[in-house]
Length: 249
Picture (cartoon, rainbow, N blue to C red):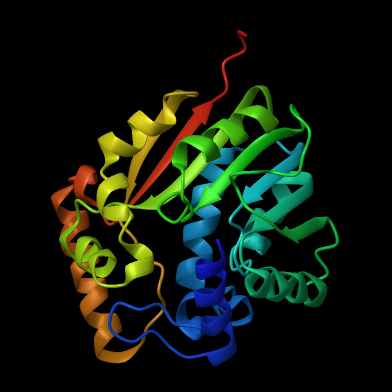
């Protein structure tokens, strides 16, 4: 994971905007800015409301938590929220954001999703937001999530959908994103997740995460509006999946 940590450390240190298909810090990872963008805040509030429900759990784990851009939307869903990210720099930004927003029930550390530092059966819910197309082994991550979840616990996954043409292009160019091309077809993703979990729900999400302005914002809004008009969720830019750990042994 050192290479990925180096990439994100550089992204944080440079603090630049997105250029071409390479995500920049200001419009993709800066929680102090992005948590205040109404469009993005509504998106995360919708996702957590629909997929995590109104039940407040004791312990929730966020694997690949990044910089914490959605932490304020997530904050009400568990008494304690644990976050793990492979990038020390991203985890440090997330800690600073939690201090600034007085989110004292978040416990964050740097670590890998392939070897979670928690005992089995610790969590009610695990979430993975834009993570599975980055990890070295999805099988190991899914196995670790299964291990740390209680029986009947929920696993929520939010990922790009490379059946969408723009998303395919955006993930074909940067080296750190290319694993999405082999993992992020909806059917492929579900097959990987269903090795351990029972699917509760899959949904296409007509949204893009990077925040832009001006002509680029207008073009993205038009693009999303056209896809929303088609109603073809299988080809929407994003996908959300919810699974449950079976009660049986």
